[in-house]
Length: 128
Image (cartoon, rainbow, N blue to C red; front, side, top):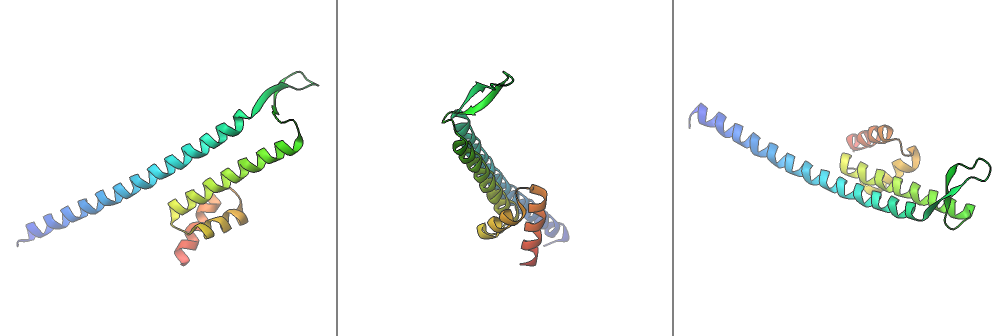
């Protein structure tokens, strides 16, 4: 085997590895897209339960809860927050490879700030 054949084989192996990595990233990206679509659909379902109304003081159009009451509005906010937290957990797991429990703990401690979550998740994975 000549040096030329050896370098050609090395080049072909590196091409194959790059293709495999691209395929894995493509699968991860598709999973994130599917998860985003699911969360968007969930948000649309929440918004369908909200009807437009008028603010009695100003007369401007506002959004009022269809069930009329502060407890229902609070429940809607909780559902939206829960969906956002779940999205961040899935995102951290897919992006950094940390476990679901670790991702949930980070979201609980830090909140929803994506850059802070990513930084801490990467540090957590690195120290593993």
